[in-house]
Length: 182
Image 1 (cartoon, rainbow, N blue to C red):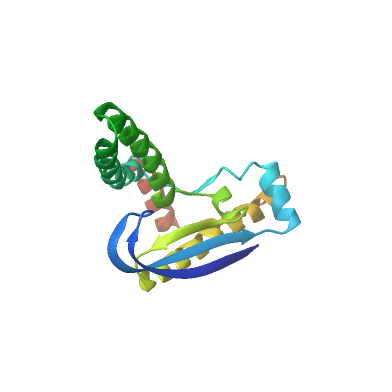
Image 2: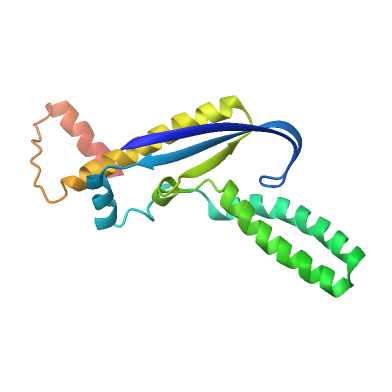
């Protein structure tokens, strides 16, 4: 398994996704996994493609997506109202709102699926170089976790023997007392 990073920066006064005005430089981190044949077979066999590596609060992500989508919809409403009727402007604003909510949700969500790293990878917007470095380290640890899950999957049919040693009398008593109060 190899984790491939691509880094880019764009200087822009305006960005639609994510919605930013006058921010200057925007950094993008692209992450993709390169798997060997055995790892691909394990992903397919155990259906890991849709597995969640990093969970997030979907409602929180949706709330973050609605705010910028509403701003874009208001602008679309104003422009459409100037050119068309009120009913058409409302319909266009609603469509823009729904579409942009989906776009922002996908771009800003914190949840990471295994499939995000496959077939071209996923890009993560970062506001600074420091955030980019933190995101790299986080993704490296996350992919390390996935690597260990795949390694465990290789041996799920094996039998493992774990010796349990007897503890000192005082330590054993403390463990029993802690276990019974839990």
